[in-house]
Image (cartoon, rainbow, N blue to C red; front, top):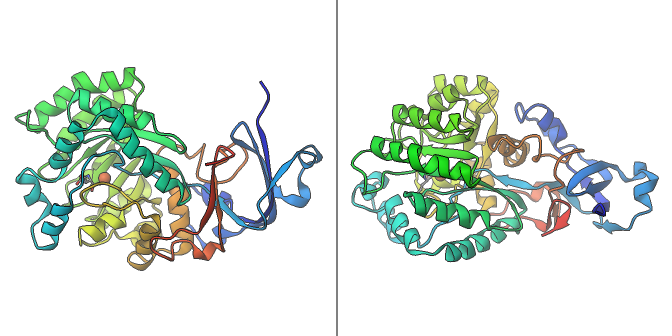
Length: 409
Ligand code: NIG
Ligand code: FE
């Protein structure tokens, strides 16, 4: 088989983020934005074979036909480590109710919330979900995103969860990381959260593993959803089968999600709005990535996580949209970055590293993606302007083209 070789020349600045990656995405400084000027990049079979100043491009590659990037800036492809991308319907009425003073948990108790989306998603066919999902993937790709985590969790029965995961598997153009979120809410068919978790452990997890539909699990640890103790039991069963995963942790109340994520060695703990200083210190010492989801905090009109404290303590932070029909009905990557900068006082360097290197760790893919280095996937975004136009204009990422595995998408 002929090897697929792609040579990119005429890169004005290449921001590799290699220094931030070497530090595991921790203790980020402005120096991490240092760029290789007048750079070249070589992709072989989708992986980076060579990266450096164009003047040093080895003669073998110099002879090849190259794609001229016309002096533009190149950054690693962005990574969305937390999305609920596949769902049917919308929850606009709930958004209106919340703004008029009805709480998220109140709405859920009345049969709205997650269970409303479960009803709509069960009505949709796998094909319909795949078509809806693909449009959403394309919307992310246009914003420079090359890897997207996609959760199930709006099926809540074996067949319906499998339908969601199969739809996720069909998605193209971006690198898709599917996560089994059967433990999102207790469906009406079960008396208690624990009997539902037993069902997931006995029927769903082995099937998802056997069909290779996901390698990660997630659970919503929250008052009215799943307790830390029940989730521990569930996660340990999943771990036994080889699943990694994340936890929706300490979003609405301090429910022990972050502590549980650390105890279980989860890849990430997500939301983290309610953390105390003890949890912050524990997370900083752990290998758990802190996935912050500020657009959900905007829509929920709540506090924002203490990003500065987390980072100062040495934690690794990632950012994501949490795109879902309830708490974050937005795919706007620029909005997430602007909120990170304005509301959490993250620097531009911290924001970009969180959206690349940090996010790659959250998915257990730090060796494959997140920075532009030899051996990693050749996933990158070409900017229309300078690096400081990133995460500036809500609704508008300055992206000229997006490349996945060395190919324009
Ligand atoms: O990340 N918190 C749990 N899951 C989602 C919300 C899902 C929904 O409301 O449909 C979240 O915020
Ligand atoms: Fe979520």
